[in-house]
Amino acid sequence: MKDLRILVFALVLLAAGCKPQATYIQITGYAQGGPWYVTCSLGPRTDAEAVKKAIDDTLSVIDWSVSGYNKGSLLTRLNAGENLPLDATFIELFNISRKIWEQTSGAFDPSCAPLFDIWGFGFTEGKMPSQQAVDSALAVVGMDRYSIYEEGGQSYLRRPKGGKLNFNAIAQGYSCDVVAAVLENYGSENYMVSLGGELVCKGLSARGDKWRVWIDRPEDGNNDSGALKQDVISITDCGLVTSGNYRKFYVVDGQKYSHTIDPVTGRPVTHNLLSATALACDGATADALATAMMVTGVEGAQKMMSSISRDTLLGAYLVYGDQAQMKVWHTPGLDLESEQ
Image (cartoon, rainbow, N blue to C red; front, side):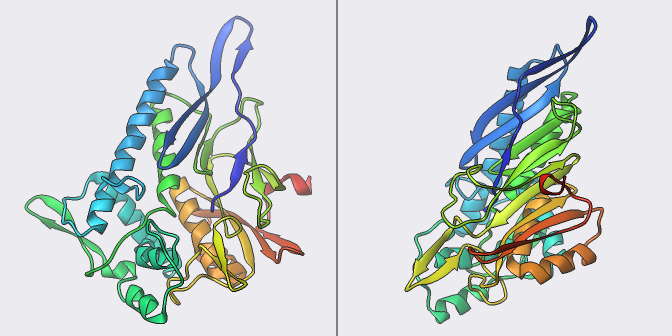
């Protein structure tokens, strides 16, 4: 679960003498099963309604391509067994996912969709699966089993029989990147984009400093973003996503089962990493790496900081331990409220 709260959404007119300056506005909408928010600076003659329409149109394209919530999307139809030509959005997101799958040694793996389904965290009703069901799902997991091929001038997906993809752990971060590109096309140099908690920001906030982001405390039962604060981090020119296991889980016979599935074991993770915040070069990468960190645990997340280029993975903030005693590890140099 990606959980954070943008602290500043404001409508501010900045003025220097009589010379008109950029206006900060808030634009909101709904896509991919939840709300999206944009705070950005625009020139005084820019039509905010036109910007909103461009964002809605862009998100609609993504929704009809790779959303698992859209029952008529390309992804949903492919997962149902149809063999359809791929669109540019699907191809781009597939290629990004394959690259990050390689960078994380398989910790981030969209082909885990069959595992999400049998554990009840996908788009079907689930129950406690048998080992046989887990083994059957694992037989079609692994991005190396999927590829794109050309035929008759069209691109198609090659996949194992029964294989499915789920882009939930990257699609919203990717969507933030695409919305950011829309804003830049309208000349915005300062913006924060948030969709489903994933965010991308650039430039400065309306206060004239970095964007301040609230990181939720990963306590079981903390179901309202912003209700309990873990920390506040100031950022700019990056993507930031927090993933955790304290909202999506169920308990059977006293055992807690989280929504993060290990692609190697085919089972929910059991380590003590409670939440992972990843700062990266863009939203898609931050989204995927936050998920990968939750798969690998604290030590695996720390290793990512040394194995993945710092031009790609900019930083991490990890909360681990147990509900009674939480500890924090983070990369040096983060602009944190707790250390000011």
